[in-house]
Image (cartoon, rainbow, N blue to C red):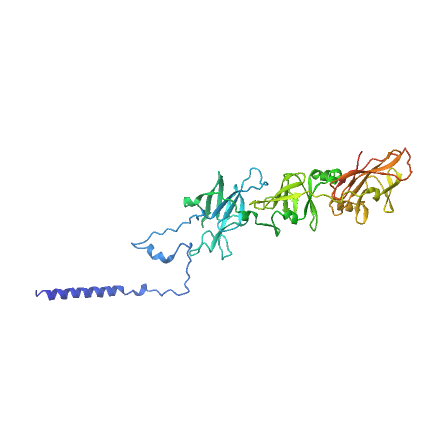
Length: 452
């Protein structure tokens, strides 16, 4: 028992020596000391937003951690993309397939060609910048959204689509920061979308140059279905041969114009008016399709630019109530100076006319179309009224008879006219009528005379 105090003293001394040695080792050497870093010491930003130098101390020593940079993954677009089926516009080229796609929470429905990639962008609603693919940490769906790239220009996120029966197969592709293609996870890379029906309000709720589109649109555009233009059929020549057998629709707006249609014709809206679609691009523009022509009614369909839906329109044939003027009251055939010159009296004024002269009855009286400008005005309907076309001078029952034909104001009706002379003037029997000739105006419009 007497050894215990000695043993306790020995342990206490050993502990004191250990503590002293530990204190000595903790004191730094003079040549190992360095000044603390100042505030203006440059720092290097991390190359990736996923990297952080807060783990730098764990890369060394016996407990070092292995660092691997997180890889980009595809976004989940299964509930973002909405497939609305095929575009049904009749102007889609044969062999080409267009589909309707939309994005959840957005009103826009866009038509895409299945043969071409479809590009997407991502942006915050509170930001004007585009191009990011993923939202930042802490962003909610209300702060950000996917959008179709403007004019389908290239972006790091795109879709390859293909029809599989009534569904749409979608391959989602993306480029990471190094330009490598990202295709994982696999269940986000390959999607299958079933077709939805386009809501009626989205299909019909649109405007044509600030005019509401509904069944009354053609009435508000002052459209009149006139019928076939007999004047162009008889005197239009080669320039108007393509429209000679078509129906004419006049639009009596501030600057009136006409369109010529038949069953199956397309009219495209461009620069504030309708145009025949031949030679014009129609996809992406309002399209008017002539579906059926009956005796008194024409049925048309108006498609919106994206082909989401159609509006049914009709036109009732208009009738020219003015009819024909009474030429017995308007003209008196006095006689002929020669076979090529006729003396005609109208409202106490005498005129000397010749074969193939044209006269239009206006509010100021009969106007002779003796210049290219006046002829152009009549052809383009800037000058309107019944048209008298003189043909030739004949002899019937011993009397000189001036023949020709008369068109009504709308040019949809024509009748043959004969004006007998009121005098006993005769011509030498040896004089023969010169052959008729064609008259051309400055727009290459051929005015062909009668050859009978």
